[in-house]
Structure formats: structure tokens, C-alpha cells
Length: 358
Ligand SMILES: [Mg+2]
Image: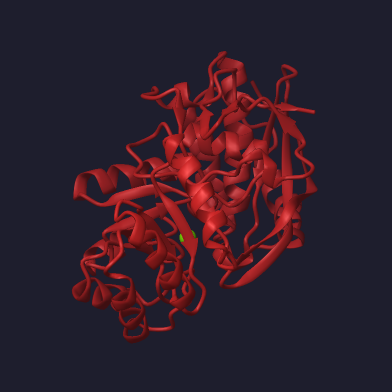
């Protein structure tokens, strides 16, 4: 099948309540929807989730690059296999540096169309599936400070099989230490993740913060310092037993190789919007498996369309954990079809990405 036309539209996703982390408070997500029409009538959809702090992309820039540079590349291209899609992405990469969220959105639309063409869900295009569902970790904004409310929510989720609870840390951890102390008094079995989103400036400050956390059951600390400070991450690793995960530092396979060579990581957070899509993510997973690096699958807060892509990506490897947008976070979801059951989220089984435009 041949690409007949493509278009990109602004897709502002409203959040049911503002989401805060060290760098920003988001009320809505300025994204874009990519639609690809094939000559046989098949339509493929993809979502580009621009996060300026993570990939340097913004909505208007993404629209402009897509319309002026990527659109002409796509014209009349044949899509009948994953390698056809990979070849297109290689060509796009020659003309456009970075812009990985935009490229991931493009890849999702192409995979969606290819799956529909082959009568297969996207995960089957890549191989197979081990589990029918995943159980994502629960993420708390750093404003959370009501222990009773937190405990009730966490205990309920634990019963549903959720094993990781991630706290966005902000610049200081004292309020978290206070909360964790209360959990520790009850049971040392509560396992927490700290996501600092680069908030601790340098390795010296990071180690100071980490010392305050070492008595708790911390599964890992995510991106404690500035993304480009690979040496700093290595320094922190020398000084603590808590595993260190790179998120903003690790976008693609090249970052991963670099972090590994500098001994900067125990784990990484793979996000499709950072690496440019599932094909690149698979290369990162293979590298991690070969070198004993743990990996989780992150997400960018997405509509059901982007979340569907993440669910297919969840079948590509043995992820330690998953971040996933649950439906009550989004007000105006343009897609439907995902199945949620308690904390379980099912991998879509219908053809393509497995969600339908409302
Ligand atoms: Mg993170």
C-alpha cells in the first residue's frame, strides 16, 4: 500500500487535574495528531507528545517541521513491512535532527496503518506477547503530603498487584522522609521510587539527599541530577547502593552506550517520545539485556492513542516497571478501545494500535 496523504493537527489534551514535577505544572498537553491515509483506504493514527524539557520540542515547531520537511518525504512511499517504516525513519533522520516525539508519532501512525494492512495488532508485527496485560506503577505529584490518604490509596493499589510507587521529589526530600517514616513504622515492605527530574543540581547535593533516603526501601532513584552530567551519575553510583536510573540523560541507543561505558547507570527509563519510537526502543532493550542493565517503560501522559503505542511497546522486553496514563487523567480523549480492569491495563488485540477515533 502507498501513502496517499498525511496531515498533522494540533491536539490539546486537557488534564482532569494539573500535574506537577520539578520543572513544571501542566494543565493541558500541547500535542499533535498525525493521520496517514493509504491508497487502499486504510488510515493510520499517531500521537506526538511534545515535552520541551525532555526533547526540546514544542507544538508549533513540530507542526512546522512536519508540514514543511517530513510531509514531502512521506509522499508515495510504500508501507508493507517494518523495514519499510525503518527506511522512512532513517530518511527523516537525515533531514531532521532530534524531534523524537514527532518521529515517534509518525512511527505510530505508520505502524497503525501497517497493522491494519496485515490484520495484526502492532505487537504481533514485532514478534509476540508474554502477558495479556501490564500493571503500571503509581506516580504521585510532589505536593502529596496527606499520609492517611496516601496510605489508603497505596494499600488499595498493592492489593491490585501494583508493586512500585513513584514520588516526584522536587529539590528537597524532607517532606518525603517524613511520609516514608510513617510507612516504615507500619511495615518496611513499602517500596518507593524517587524521581528527581534533574532537581538535585550536582552529585554532592544528590548524595546528601540520598543519605536521608537510604533507610527506606527505595527501588531506585531516577535522574537525580542534570541530564548531561554523566560523570556525576557515575559518582553518585559509587556512593550508594540504591540503584540509579537515567531518564532525561538517556534518550537513544547512543546515550545508552555512553552511560554504560562511563558506569553511570544501573537502569534506564525508555520512552518512545525520547528515542523516536518502538524500532529504536527495541535496539535499546537488546543492549540492556546484553549488558545487565534494568529498564522500565516510561510515558509522557498521553491520550489513549499514545497509551496504546506504549502498551504494544510493553511487549518488546522484560521491563521492570511501566508508567502509563490512566483514563481518569484525561478530559478529552479522542480515542477509545483500551481495556482497564482495576490496575490491569490490557495490551490491545485489534489490528494496528487497537484504538478507534471517536
Ligand atoms: Mg522520570
